[in-house]
Length: 200
Ligand code: GRF
Image (tube, helix red, strand yellow):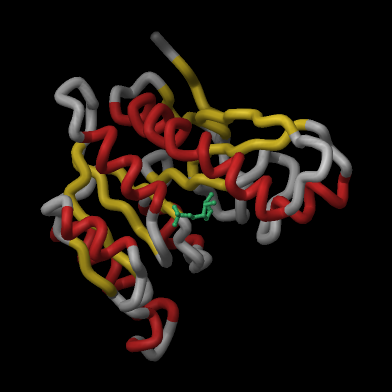
């Protein structure tokens, strides 16, 4: 399967997917990286790996719809089968989400359905949970609401701060995202009627 990754920042998850896809057994290849910001650090990292990477800055477009049309055209030009959101900080319209339903993944730094939205590590500390983690899910119209594909838990330790939690969760995000993408690319995880259906 051909995979495009959408980013807004440093793209460490994107780099992890590129790294995983280098393995001959991996069922997907990363064919394009698109950022909505021209200064996204991940663009250079992707280019250094020989992957087509460029910005489609949302600020260059008069409306959200026009920007999404440009992104959509780029995804089709890249012949992408699957889209991975990796720290992509733009909410997508219901139309865009519908077009990629069952084929678009996102990684979120919490054990969903806990702590949707931003500042998940602060939310976790505030709630006092002793277990935290990350989730890869199919993207649906509701933010951070789609059916879950893979999760990894990490402990919350005494003295943890948002920074220490960020680091601990990020260290498991990379492997989790690659595992989830492989499940979807092989058809072992599929979205059906708003749920993830798994098969061997
Ligand atoms: C990750 O924590 C991801 O879960 C969240 O944004 C962050 C992106 O980091 N959605 P990176 O750009 O992949 O390094």
